[in-house]
Length: 348
Image (cartoon, rainbow, N blue to C red; front, side, top):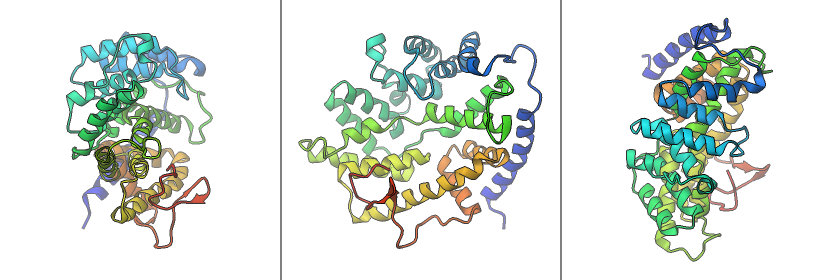
């Protein structure tokens, strides 16, 4: 009997052939065409998008003003654009995610009064992913009480969804309307592969909240005087991320949070091993996807259709013949060295 995911995968694969051909074909002409040099593509597109009537276009354009790797370049301009977009589209989850993420950054208050780290949490308070920006903002400003309350809200939540599929859909649409110039990349899979990589990278930056401040706030080694309740909540938050995050990064962040809190027990070992094993196996498969635009397109179609990178990962692991659980003698390695599941000194 054909499973639903098999049907989805075949449909996605067929669609990928059409979409890949369209992306690799001639660049469009008319008002939506972008004709520019590779070095100027991101900032020129960013400024072009500010002429759009769509607040989401404005917000995505603001992200394009950031450098890669991030340096907080053009921060004042990005904040002004995102503030305008957030006010114009208060119910757009992706716009609010971009605004909430940047407005919780460490340099925000040095540029303008923007403190809107709670906007996404107010929009959907039951999604623990929306409280990460609140933890980050509170922790960076020294408001330990607010950080504790946000971690407690995370611990009491039943969901952790970064909505990576929605972000991928938004960026793929954007780059189909505004393709990069020919010759903008040396990507081995060509222009189609470059556009897919670009869309995935931007989607991850849009959707996945930085969790380093959460790990730091939950570190018992760094904050030994914090109360037991604090670390218990951190442990619950870590387990939530490991079990319910919809991205690989999110699940690995859960491992880091649980380890840092030292709230893990023997009951957590199997889940930690499963998460770290799957992430390691998927990293091996990524090399294949990076060199095959159709396979990568299929992978992204699955993420978008399920709004879940984890669901797509499980499918790819099965297709490539990789088990979802590790052998009994397997150990995660970090920096080439094996680590124990509950080792709080290991950074996954």
